Image (cartoon, rainbow, N blue to C red; front, top):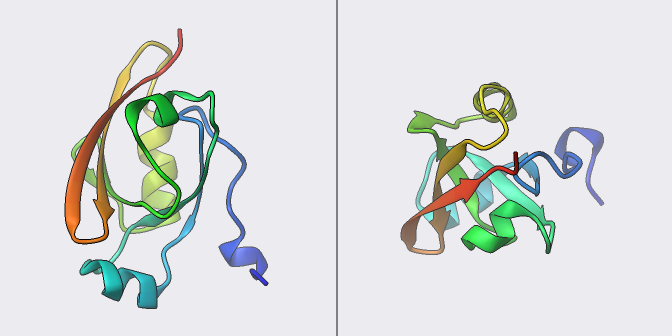
Length: 103
């Protein structure tokens, strides 16, 4: 059961629902901080770009994402039609995906 602080956000403009990354998961991924992708909207832009549930977002637009606040701040700067560059940590690999926002 997730407590309220860890409940995923609703699907955002990238088509992702994210939640805080717990320390155990961060340790398994070999990172210190980030936010975790809880859900990917199947028809959303992030799904088309290759994001998956369980990925940890460590950068958005080349800005470090250490917390939900960092993620929300970076997300707020994106406009319709922008391409968002995400750096994801997936198991032992760092993966970049470019997510094109709808106009």
